[in-house]
Length: 180
Image (spheres, rainbow, N blue to C red):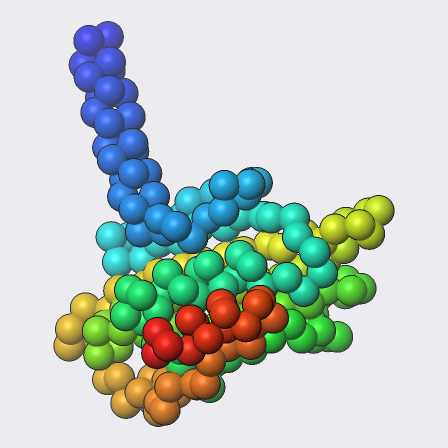
């Protein structure tokens, strides 16, 4: 009995480490090396996500642009009606009310609406106000062919939105625009 339990535990640990490395592959290059509180989420083989936190200067696009660049080079396009692509105040009626919170929210698609990728980032000042904390939620959803009528999502995503706002150097902005 004890041996059977050990085999089940070893098998479980092996499977969880494989799925963890699979998640790392999915989000490779999107999680900064200084990220804190990294947490992988997996609902099914068709959906997964990651959350993490980074410190930055207020309204920095550095880490957001790294995710955007990875998505563009992977073939994702920004859905036009989804984009809150520049820092905007978090809605006043959000519960619980939090002062000085800003957010960005973007939906990307590829493979003829077979894959969707969501970026949601909020930022708020640290207690001493010298830096800001950006909380990232990145989620990937794969839609099986023939699963649902995609007419409404096609209208939501087309035409593709203009470039997201970035305040990095002009060279970076120009490189971003060339990737479209």
